[in-house]
Image 1 (cartoon, rainbow, N blue to C red):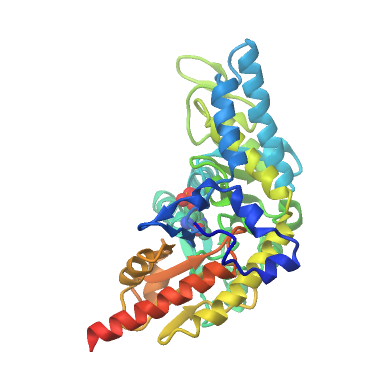
Image 2: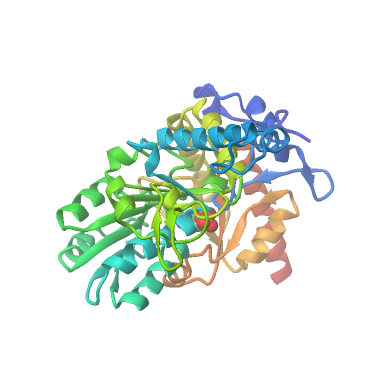
Length: 425
Ligand code: PMP
């Protein structure tokens, strides 16, 4: 177990981050894999590890005040409700939401987007209406709109991705001259790492009379995101990608939209008055939280947000930006390695191919050396195909990664290259 002995982290040093102390807070980073090797975890775009503060918040909730929220009049239920609602307040503050009621707890980004597709889209869209997406959308921000288009007769339009991995904003402007009702766009691509100019894109969509949903799955965890500043209508993100538990996420939406939208799921807790054949709905956000919610998850996510705040999202972003730049430079040393995504504004998801070696073989080979990366279609099949591949490999970073992790990956990729070149020869 080497967490600090071999660590090089000049970037972190500059930012005043004590990487050894920081890593010490993540139990998972202290386990070993494949016979005693340090786990080098570089699959953060898929899910992040959890600090003890989050694990403890979840465990403490179950140990000390487990009860169903909002229902009972007894003391522990009141305590559980207070913790659950305090988490909502933490989340509202974290993304600059004007009101706590605009935060709906969901299972994650996917559910948040489906909620909008059903709760807003089913009632509003008509044949001939258009939904503008981009070619870099994750399946979570594609399939719900395909299904909605099939239900309503609306059409999907796509903003092309240019060679450097940025969006074709000229084409976007042209698309906005159509009958566009919604623009649904990722803030940061999980494949290319591109950070899209969402603020400007929102302003342009609004001028064209369209609403904007931002997929914040890869942005909210990694840099400051403020919905008031972005002026977006909807923002979806997942707790598990930002140190929080799995099965919890958020939909932010403007109050007037939430109030006018239909519920997505029906059941207990989301009603005001129920008759045999009809019902009225609870106030927002409860109208969208049918059934017993993920109380432990929300409380854990609140703890994650408080933990992140001690560093500041700006520091986190600067650390990741510097580490990503270092990673790109070092990865390019590996013969036959091609990186996809060269946008000037990019985050720490770095996808690559290694000439002549299948990405699954790359991932398996580096895994043998203790390094966890992802390989596959990364839930963006159409874009990967457009790039001429069936799959790619991806390394993705978080606050606890440093140069030693990148160095380990690069060394493992050199070995992979040598092994396969030798095997071929
Ligand atoms: N959008 C993007 C950009 C993502 O990276 C992901 C997760 N990989 C999702 C949406 C879906 O998130 P979840 O599976 O947590 O719902």
